[in-house]
Image (cartoon, rainbow, N blue to C red):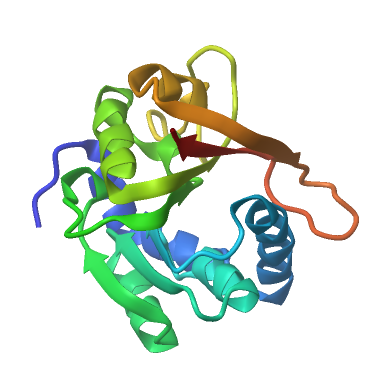
Amino acid sequence: MSYKTEQELFWAGEFGDAYSQRNDGEQLLLSKIALFSKIVQRTGRLSSVIEFGANIGLNLKALKNLLPNAAVSAVEINEFAKNQLEQWGGCEAIYHQSALDFSSPKTYELSMVLGVLIHIHPDELATMYANLYSSSSRWILLSESYNPTPVAIDYRGNEGRYFKRDFAGEMMAQYPDLKLVDYGFVYRNDPNFPLDDTTWFLLEKC
């Protein structure tokens, strides 16, 4: 499989494997269920969801815990993570490819990306926004590290692998028909349901 960027190759390889093995566990799943319980209060029932960069599927598992009848699909670049998704067996479809190259065969009520845009080369973000937008019939969820202006951060000793910015603001500027419905912050030191510091934004097509 060939890739456009160094970032895609990075996550498709051994570093991505290690990330998948490191980010697992019951507490992490419970924290994600707590996060999605807030989000689905705004969306209501969802019949179909697609996640870009689903990894081993903890976000989708959390959603299925709350909405067991929702049909969920995944786009995942890493083979180890893709195999874990297959073993779980909860996905309607798994697309083993880069999210940058994904062309959705249909639309879903919710398209979402969590902790992935921060690892996309900035020159390719417009493509990611376009893929998220075209995959959604109504809702779009972004959950990423936020900064009001673009900044690059060293990531576990690797340069050019972590970028913070106002992803939601940029996407709404690219697609003016998107409306901000809700947003929130999850703190790494939350006493009950901690997650890495992340800000989520729920957008709706108008």
